Image 1 (cartoon, helix red, strand yellow):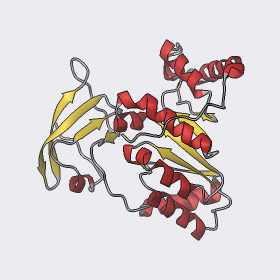
Image 2: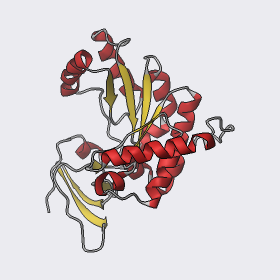
Image 3: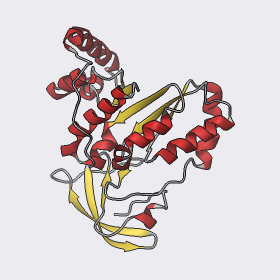
Length: 252
């Protein structure tokens, strides 16, 4: 099977032994041979019987750091439209404070640094390990928010680390008075199939400590909103936003 990828920089950064993960972890592979413009990979994990990989699905490289140089030409063209028509700009795949700096510089060029809100998506291992520096740079603009993008983040830091990592991001943002968005698969089964799972009800109760929650689309999304609203209202008296001091953040 042959899979194409538009991002050419991965061929410079990846090496033999690095993992390549497809479609939010449904397929996991490892690079066994490397060529100038291609990899040979071996599938090491998927569901029994195999999994179909559809077009336009995500590719994660949890073992690889890909050097990105600020915003692309397309990003800057899109930003012209965003500045004129939107209230908030959302920047994906932040890795370092330099990524944030490049966005803020472009906002200043458009005189939008005081009129446009900024949401930074934390969805890579590198971003988590650089979170303090990212926040210090981001706080040069107001308003600022952080999205905890748990889909890609789970692949990047490992499933076993996600519970701790998502809580640590929220804790440090709370200390910095930066609102967080709890994102990815919140009430997913209910929104898409009309019936919630026990696990997503528990997850929704944890989401209460974030300032905002993101739901994905689905034919039952209104029912999911009603359920989320009920859970939040019924648990409000049990929610304590004033936690004791937590341990230092550990790198992953």
